[in-house]
Length: 494
Image (cartoon, rainbow, N blue to C red; front, side, top):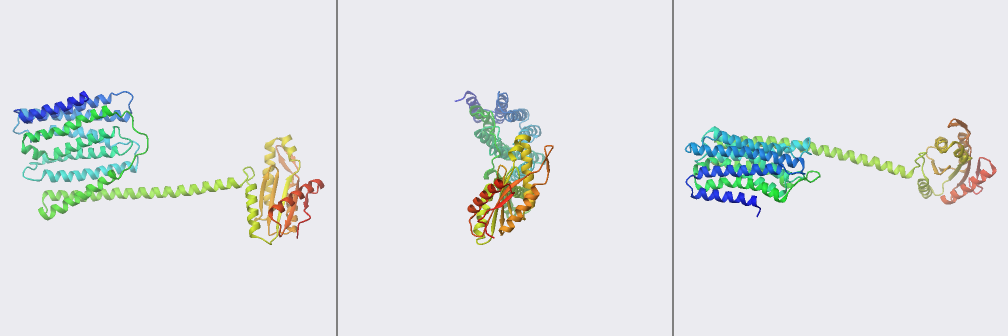
């Protein structure tokens, strides 16, 4: 067994024996509790000083050390109180309870500001969850302290019981909530031990009037249990170790998200039980007020959740729209030439096949166009000038055909035009318009060019697209050979 852990357990065992057999069980109990809390503070300080650990882990154990010092001071004051004036020690609790509550508050503030990645609505929801648990804990403590003949005797005692218990119970909830994320500055076992200790401290504070009235050796031993478990937690952390936190988004679980609603249900159940049996007493009025406050906080939390859901749905819609736009861009890029913006060879072939299948028996024409002396432009003026000429050619081609016709760049300086529902005469007229538009002078890289092209034309009512394209290719080379501008394939039909 680890020596430090063995020392903590040994301290508890010796204290328990002295409480059962010694002459001053109360003083022994409070003194032992102070020793165990001092041990927790010292071990937390040792963990704070560990080298090469995450800054959040370091800050947590620093806060835990401060909390331990304040709790130790409260325990010492309580022990001195019992030693000096044992008869009234149970009612003179303001200073020690204030110190103990302050220690718990230091830890609670740290816990409720973690994980640091929570911002905006997520952080507000965490605080609202804590508020729900806090109100529910207040109702439970209120009912406990006002139950039985040994209930809290005055307002001061009731207030401090409420304050200390609620802070500790909410701290336990915050630890559990933090454990369910990837941002916990301690390992899971340490978190469970810490949450158990702090929750038991809360129960001990709530039951203080009853425990003080019992004034039994067993009750004084029981008071040591939370301090023992608290002192064990740094030992567990030291043995298992957490130098860094896991990196990743917070992990939500059903356990932590349901805790606030379970608390609301239990408070409502208490109200149902109390009202028929006790009527409107001070205790039941506290439960009624707590129920009203709980409903208000839960309504605020659910409104926040609905707003968050609406925001997520809106973001999802935006993402779907953006995905659609991106898909359209990719589809356009796959089907179009990046330089000229015209349809590419794949799109041209697909569209021609689809047109051939749907327009059987109707006239179709294909024009193949090749720029004359384009290689000379590239060689003398450079490729950038050639690119400018290709873009200008694409623009003039689009303006020379009908809106429903398809213009494509097949590669290099070769272009094609697919005319739907067109005769050979329509194709020849289109070739005249194209050649007339292309031959207009243009300034490229500071020089005036007069583009020229050779156009091959093929038209038919019955031929498949592949045959038309082959005929248009033959006609284009014949136009180049004849230097005639365009040539209509002889197999073309009117």
